[in-house]
Length: 557
Image 1 (cartoon, rainbow, N blue to C red):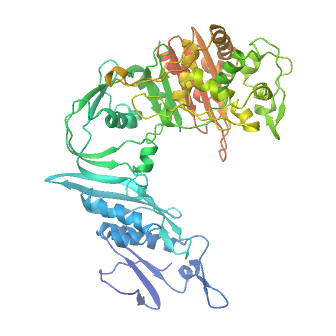
Image 2: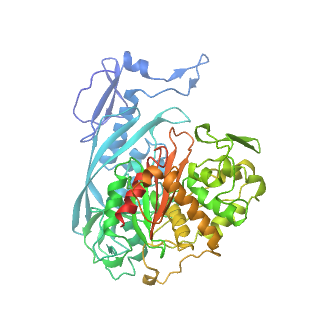
Image 3: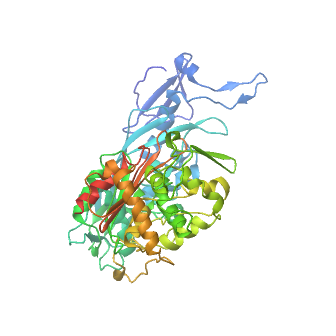
């Protein structure tokens, strides 16, 4: 690549010839870039080629550093100088980019935009944004970091900015908009169960929860709207139940008040526990009522604890065992071997580390989390048995929970053959999150399903979900037997060491395609507390999520 040099800004209708090379100019404060292409190394980096017949081939191969820098410079310069159509033309989706970039000034009322380019890494170029939000005599500075990625356009191989709304602001999803004006939803002041204020500054994990509380209760909690720059969610985001988000507040509204069930002590402890892992989530609740006492996630952009959709691995064996006990197919102390491998519908299932239990009880297999001791029941089950058990006893998968903020209620689809067998050990199509699995342990401990909730239903007179039937006292006793054994002697014993009283636990490890380590799961109860957690790509649940859950059960007294 030729040397960079700075020259006075001037308009051209075509690239200038400088000493036999083409000077491509990208101008604008903070992102000025002058890149020379000549007959040397830079020319060799380019991948444009011509066939023997004289027809131009579509360029392929990796982008050169010059192509990345020039494309990023053109985009950022045009955006900064208020030329949205020109900036959009350098992207992979000019229509979507043009609409959002036009709205950046027109709807979001952002002006005096300065974009400062960072150091590229491959095709990705980070940049810093500084601007002023200005609306009806009110103004406030705004600063944030973002990034763009330059790719080859499939049709002609030209380098373009790979368009996503997150290029404009990292909190945007495709289809979302930025708007400044009087907020349609007044702010809310969220309180914990003791009356203390909950803020994202004090409890970082609660950012998405507070957004959800405002979205649902802002108009009814007695507040008055202020003037804000907000992310207004599009259709796709609304389907994912992502609430609108405030990015800057130009004038304060008068907040209404919403009291939650969160415990300040347990919430603080949960925040501390998840911070020790890269991608951890946890929920603590009260089995006797369904009250949610804590929710925390390492990553604060998405509430995996409430809205995640992940295979729960062997923690699902609690639901499977409930079904097996109710059907009279096994009892905890019944002799039940766990073979090293088991073939079902053309699949060969293996236990973790190819282990086996030749002469043990079902309780031993549950405590050791030996997969094939569960999968070998598949021929005795109908395809819908597990689905019905999850729905009818545990209230899962019916999409009717109303906890006070957006949540995913789990999914246990009807499957057949090998996929049905995989579902018995929490793989296949089964999807859960820590809220769902905390509720499973809570249901075992209470003997009946109490839908979890974050805001008392009396606040807005909403109806909580109910299970259509309750497990028998005999089945509950059998479940508590195997879960207590697991907590004392099985895969959960190390994590649960020192957690006394009426306890039970189950570990899980869920394989994920393309992920080197499995997601580690752990769910347990102690007295009138139940909790569940997941550490994504962490490894075995007893070693990763287990210490988080056990620490919170101890913290709850």
